[in-house]
Length: 257
Image 1 (cartoon, helix red, strand yellow):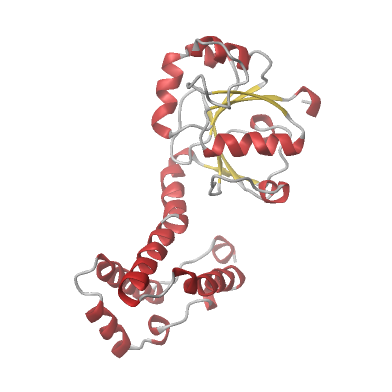
Image 2 (cartoon, rainbow, N blue to C red; image 1 turned 180 degrees about the vertical axis):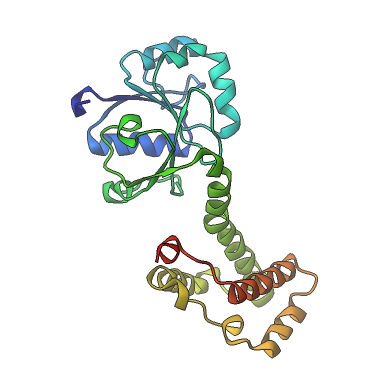
C-alpha cells in the first residue's frame, strides 16, 4: 500500500487516541476520528447520532484503530458490528480478540504531546501471525512479534517496570514532605540518574545497602518503616534481590551463547 492511500480511523478520545492522531499529523498520514461524546474534539463528523458519526469516520478509512480501554473494546464491537467490515487493530497489551489484530505501543502517554522523534522510537508488539506493515502501514517504528499466549505476562511485566516505580516515587515523596518537610523535587536528580545508570549498565546500576549487604542499615530501615505499607514492599524487594543474587536472570542473548 502506498503512503498516499493510507487512511486511519482512530476511535476514542483517550490519551493514546490523542497521541496517535498527533503522530499521524506529524507523519502527514490522513486520519479521521470518532468518539461517543458528540462534543468531543476527536469527532471529525458532527452527526447527532453516534452510529452515523462512526460510519462517516469509517468511510474513507483503510484501517481502523481501537485505542480504547480493554473493557470497552468488546462492547464497542457488539454495539457497532459493521466495524468488522474493516481492518481492525486494537492496542491492548493484554487482550487477544477474534477478528481484531493486536498492536501494542510500549510507551506511557501523558496529557501533552511528544516530538516526532519520540513517537518514531516507540516499539510496537504485534501478535504472532500478524505483519506490522500490514496492520500499521506508514509507521517507521521498531516492532516485535509476541505469541498470543504470552501477552498477559508481557503486559504484567510492563506494568511492573513502568507503573509500580511511580507509585513508589509518590509514596516516598509524600513521606519526605509530610515527615521531613523536604520537597519532592530533591528526588529528581537521584531518580533520573538511577534510571540513566540502569539503561547504560543494568547489571552494575544497583547501589545502596542491598547491594552492599549492609544488614545494620537494613534493620534500621525496617524499624523506621514499621506500620507503613512501604515496610512490606521493602521486605519484598529484599527477597527479590536475594533471589536474583542466587539465581541471576538470564537474557535471551546469554541463552543463545
